[in-house]
Length: 373
Ligand code: FAD
Ligand code: UDP
Picture 1 (tube, rainbow, N blue to C red):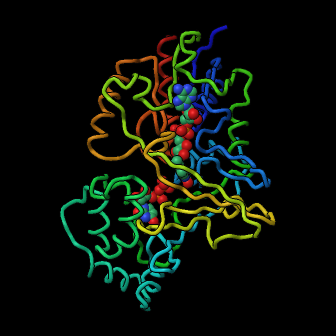
Picture 2: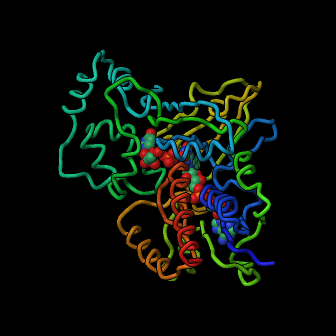
Picture 3: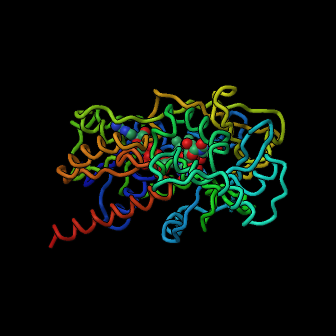
């Protein structure tokens, strides 16, 4: 028997759309993923020691949208969690995003007010026209010394590009603060799915009209499938056989290690911005994120890589121009809907992907309603 819709990818984008189509429109949905599990890059599982880890790097949920939080709350309970990150700079661990504590500790100062810290930034900032690059946005805000200590090396490692070659939006994700707020995110909702992400995905996809096939690449089986519409959450250039040339992506190699101690480091993540002494960008310790109690602890180091699974679209003007050629082709392919971080080549967080998927579902629903009328 055929399916109304085939969904390629069981990550946030694909799972949200499959859930909505089945539960709200009664569609028969087939979800495919080439990996042997659901959840996409948010997949988590216990490692050999029984410690819950995120197989594709640390995932912390945060959003300002009550709608997105409420939607996901149908499928999971939450554990409140506010992520904190330290950066290893000049042999110290100091808060990142840069805040008043960072400045006082690094420069041996005793600035007491937001105004003092803002004056410190202003004295070093190099003003200019609207910042276009990841270098300009930091240097214009806090000056070159802090840029070099915290951003230049980290960014060069993470992206294989100089910050001057990347859109301003990339480093603008981590803006400096004048106060002492040391949380990594300031969103209204910050929490982790209580029994983990994978359990949340299982509940989302647990529907009699949803069939899941894992370890199957869509491109290997597409000729054998019988369906009406397609939702594609893999890389958009791959769908079109790379006909305009490959879209660049950045990958990572994850190195997991379990240590026979209860705690490895003081916060969920420690960043290592130095380019010459350390090849990885950050170390994350999962028990901080999950709240799990265990006598041992597992950490992961992230080593950026040019090849491997596509994890990050690379935000810069020439890549956007190439993506737009694929997007125009997609617009001329009406029964295929491209969604998600790879399907729309957007550096989106999980909540943004959920929001985008819900919006795409509403468009599909409106299309079915007008076709029926
Ligand atoms: P994915 O999760 O990539 O899912 C796409 C799925 O499609 C994959 O499972 C893939 O196997 C499958 N697929 C692709 N092509 C095919 C094919 N041809 N056939 C079959 N299946 C196919 N976001 C946050 O909000 N907070 C964080 O803390 C955070 N940390 C992150 C850390 C790292 C290291 C990374 C890489 C990302 C992080 N993110 C974080 C972003 C988050 O992972 C994404 O926003 C989200 O997972 C994107 O969901 P998606 O469904 O678009 O894509
Ligand atoms: N960044 C940096 N130093 C840091 C943290 C971030 O230079 O200590 C830059 C870097 O370019 C990084 C970007 O800011 O890729 C966004 O950081 P974020 O932590 O949001 O990255 P993600 O969690 O998405 O990998």
